[in-house]
Image (cartoon, rainbow, N blue to C red; front, side, top):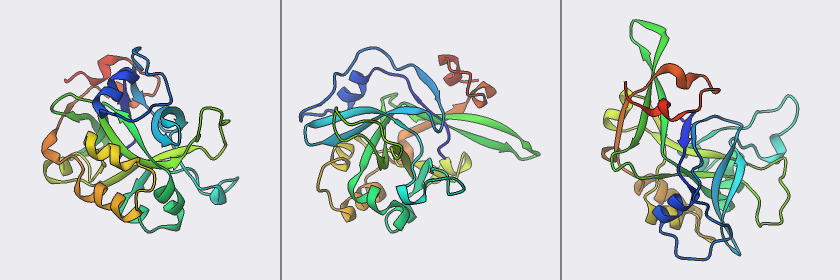
Length: 232
């Protein structure tokens, strides 16, 4: 996890779910984003806080600190394992100073056929409430409305070990934060230790989710319609 997810509601719907009361620095459109097959390296709407308020910016999915970028070096990572992100030099600056949120509606996982490892069945995972969700994320992103897109801009989704029945789908899952915890996650000046506590102990429990089989069409990034999340 996590290699594909959905982000299809309008910006204003995610903002309403977040219940953000402080200033915002973008215009929350009511037009649906309509992305049912978000893939790595593509630009994704990301929520992050700056001095002038909450921003929502299009940022590439994939992060690498500037000192490892370049030809022949490590490619950008799409996920950051919680267990290593809190102590690794690779993630240090992003963890301390560039926490952000990915507003989303669900994600996909593929389960291997026990009789044929080459065959995989995709599943879609979402909140039972069918509400939007917020992935804990870290990275680098524009700091204000006048910032130019930078080559180092990008983000990674924080993941943790799956729990209970979700382990049968995949052994990793995104850290999904409830709205009140998500608001604290992006606060300026939040201590790294508190951020770790939020991610470890205050994320949505596995009981909040449901999952079901979907068509294998999601395996092709060119397939983008709402039919992708329909149950088989």
